[in-house]
Image (cartoon, rainbow, N blue to C red; front, side, top):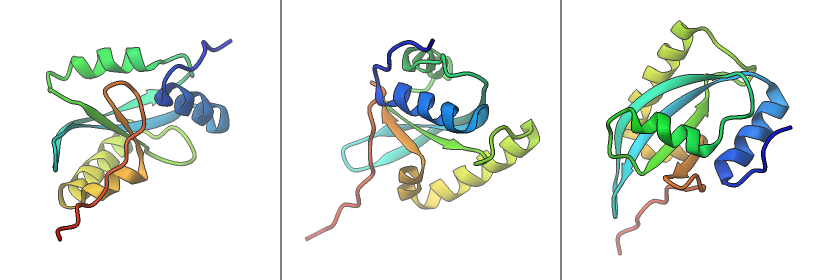
Length: 126
């Protein structure tokens, strides 16, 4: 039996795994500033169970060496797992698109360092 969900991430992971089973997750770590979001690191992870919790992800992200305070997670494929080569290709494409359009972060699951949901909003100059 899965542990109680304590963060938005935990809830999302349990629901997603329950819906599609094992899947490949594309990960983009970011630094969120007052009016900017900088891309820091990216990777992918094959999710084969729903036991992973936000604290586990924080430890994993810490090994990147990046001073991150946000993480965007995307399914590499709606059908579930993909091969490593496909995951690398889709991650590279995602990062290329994010370099020019940060709003794409909203198309994934976007979390702060506490595992709570975030949303990018455009700043409108007056």
